[in-house]
Image (cartoon, rainbow, N blue to C red):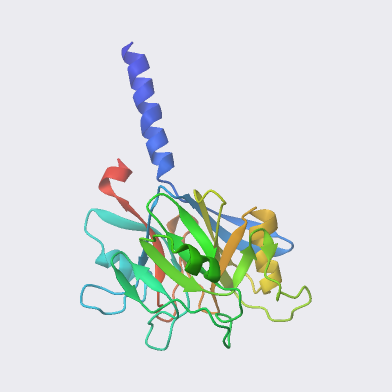
Length: 248
């Protein structure tokens, strides 16, 4: 009985660890290479922008330093476009504070290539939601960041993406499952088109909704892949945090 109890305790511990895991790996799709990190809605997903003194964090290392000693950043990625002062373009929500507003009109650049969308981290689910649907539904988000364009909308590629496009950049984004329980972040390891990047989420990852975060400045923090990309200061950053209780 003691052995059975010990075995059951081990299984429980393993299940708890798995429930708080973020899995990162390199994949290939249609001749392009990507780093993909997958998690569940049960993860401690957060957005980061400023420290308590209202200074822009800007780097993964600064995010880590801003956390309590009992917590660690185990995944990070830039999470939306920003102005020259690193303030977010469009809606940004971080717990009880909001910076910027929901932008619904077309504009120049990738952000305004409608439809765009919002990455919403709720209490029990995580969703990528097209902007006009977000405006109508008014979901409750603990954290939210608006970006654009949408890569995949309800299982369909963005209508403006061209198969023969010559615009290629390192790109990153996020996709979510229909039930809001699966979230997948991806960054290309070589320059790709929007069409190629969208098909990664739609065809390879099987996600019905996906959102573009940015290009050129795309960065990833994934210790599992030995990645801690350096570069210019970032604006909004999405991260997964693990505390002491989750590590035991």
